[in-house]
Amino acid sequence: MGPISQAQAAGRSYKAAGLSLAPAGCSPPGEPSCKPALSCAEPALVENRSQTGAPGRDSDSSPRHVGKKVLIVYAHQEPKSLNGSLKTTAVEELTKQGCRVTVSDLYRMQFEPRATRKDIIGDLYNPEQFNYGVESWEAYKKGRLAEDLVEEQRKVKEADLVIFQFPLYWFSMPAIMKGWLDRVFVQGFAHNFPECYESGLLKDKLALLSFTTGGDQGMYSDEGHSGNIRYLLWPLQHGIMHFCGLSILAPHICFAPESAPEEERAQMLTSWAERLKTVWEEEPIDCTPEWYYK
Image (cartoon, rainbow, N blue to C red; front, top):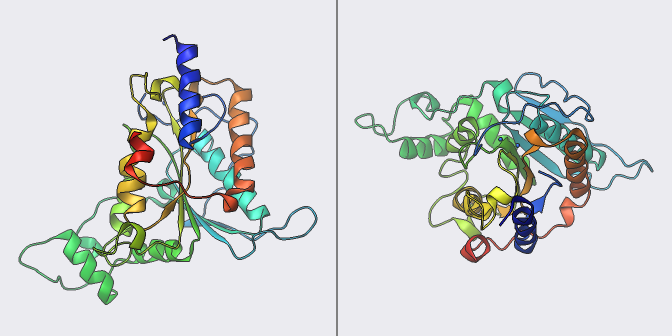
């Protein structure tokens, strides 16, 4: 199958699977997009640990979603990248709706991704043999987790929707974002077996993965070298998010913006803004093996 027909077939399979795709097609299986989105306003700088958008109103001064809270966990080194522009677009659009938007800009925060003894304040539960899972669980119950983790958990606890914005790295998320999940989603806070999946501790919240790829749409199709992109979403959406009880909205994927012309990259931002206008009306996907592997 040639590249054009392959991409067309991929588009049909993605729509059938309920995936949200930006028109056209960020990087090889995991390289960030650093090509500036010239049509997009430059992202606002994030001071200290996070960026917060104040609740806004529509042009007719009628707030639509006042009271809704959104956390954007953002992992990209370059504010002028497409990922940076997608993050800014989300902040602007959701704020217009009256949402309270908070951004955890992991690189700007210099977030520590390593799960270590430093995450535990005071004495260990078992000083003879360090087990991070056990120690973080005990520390959470006793209020002895490190301050940066407590702050991130507060943001998650307050959020109605958590958006993860990132470039695909080696068929997964960047290490700094995976480290955020390792350290923040500890037992007792996000899960506590058998309280997982539908009964997970974050069950009243929504999650949405918004990411860019290096390969084009055809590369991530059934006929492509990388296989259907739904396969990559199983460990991220099901193994992490759904395990913790989060209801999963269809992912938003921008394919190969590094090689896309400026007008197509601008359209990717427009499509993202348009989707966010009705994001609160979306139904979560059926997060079962069939959705990923049918």
